Image: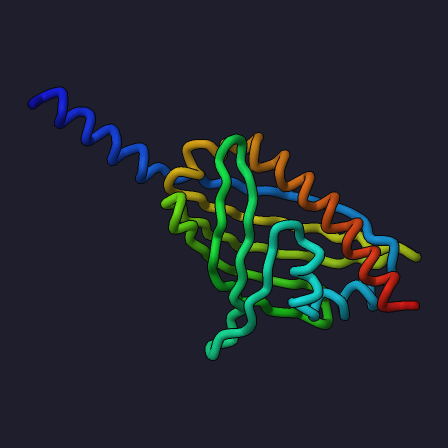
Length: 171
């Protein structure tokens, strides 16, 4: 009985594990800040540029529904959730807060993001600061290093896709 109780407590601790991390990214897009800013206001268009993302539409409360699928090591997750997006037109800052659930993998995620666009001649420099909180199965696998590697790949693909979308829109 004693060993069984210990195993039950260990399982409970593992499933309750939470991983918190801060990710900072800076990248450039080969378009003017004005064009990038207007594009970033097109949430369905931006979602198309993010690998694994699907935009589902706005809620009545102004939040945006979506899904994102990703692999973290051997673990595949499909998060569904909602995010609130705020734009500061005078300072070119986007603030987003969201949360989602992967029901199949028993995981939860929460995110706060601040994104700043800077004019850099013909380029736009985009600085992103993200606070991420993961819990459940993904938190056990999703060490900060793995999540950073995935974020780097996602950003690289996002930049390529955004530049392609902006090129199409400008022609």
